[in-house]
Picture 1 (cartoon, helix red, strand yellow):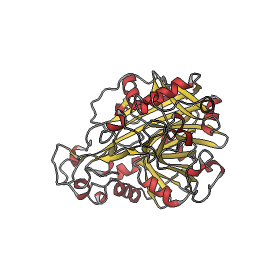
Picture 2 (cartoon, rainbow over the protein chains, first blue to last red; picture 1 turned 45 degrees about the horizontal axis):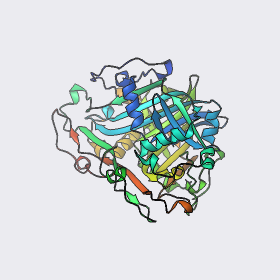
Picture 3 (tube, rainbow over the protein chains, first blue to last red; picture 1 turned 90 degrees about the vertical axis):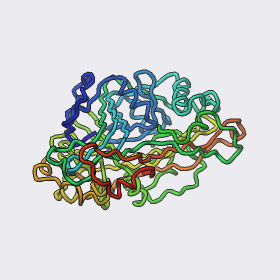
Picture 4 (cartoon, rainbow over the protein chains, first blue to last red; picture 1 turned 180 degrees about the vertical axis):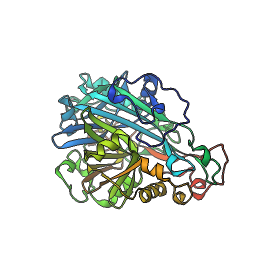
Length: 227
Length: 227
């Protein structure tokens, strides 16, 4: 995440090294993470990524659903969509996922910050041949087991859908945790300081009004959990 | 949001018309919104946006904190950061904000979808001259009243910080709400269908361990509320 918070009191070591010049994090490098476990966890916690790419109309940034298999991030869409058509040409893309975990309130305005986990991936998407298997994995990510319950895509639906993936090889993560990093001379100021946490949580399932069926485990267990 | 869910049962009218060719939504155009109220509400509900831009190393997509004043979206950062340096050159940018509101489980795999609110803004950032006032507005967005409590930025801190803004004139929103849009012939399938809601919620404040001060109203009232 872009920031001016120097987090200069951080003692966290940088895990690994950047896979390329454009993934080498320079701002607040102490928050950089280059290990697979951090990257995979950030992707797995996401339902949506932001895909940036350029065409003759400029630079675009489009949100779309995503999931991970192995060391690839997957997306899907209609064959006719701009995003899919452009990416199918081999256009370079940058995929970013960000989870905001809290507001960090410091005693000085300057040291305010946010806790977050972000991942930035560079590369080109490639079309996936076994679309049915990939979409089953997507369904499993959304609701484990549902890939065996919902009516599978028929040949017309599968034909209208493109599944694409991008390697996670050229990627960088940034993670900020913990409280504010105030200047020593500000610590005695009569100002509340700390973290205001933010969490994505699950609400009560809303059954569709027509022909309601018994709720499977992933629906019964949905409510109240943090994602 | 890119999607293949046709949402063909939607009866929502499109509000307004696209301000430009590149903001005219073609996929699932029924979900498009071009009115100021929708756009402002999506920006105001966000702590972070994704900024896409291109340089000689390719297309990038960087998350950064944001806030709104009038019909502009604001960001800030260190003068030395890549994002700020590139945007200061007048590089075309695309700013995207996405809120995921739920998973939409249909009876067929094909009609699965997500409920969401997204905004895509095109334009060029410009530097803001009155940085202190803009950063006060940012603080007010994060924690109303705190702009009068935290130590303000000193001349050195303000000099190290750049505040930039982009007009919200060329923007498009997409909003999906409601349940699944199954094909009529699938409605009798013995498959649970409905929405699994997702909400960003606020957790219990974590005071910084040093010199704890009384909590102001925006801290006492933080916990448990949806954002």
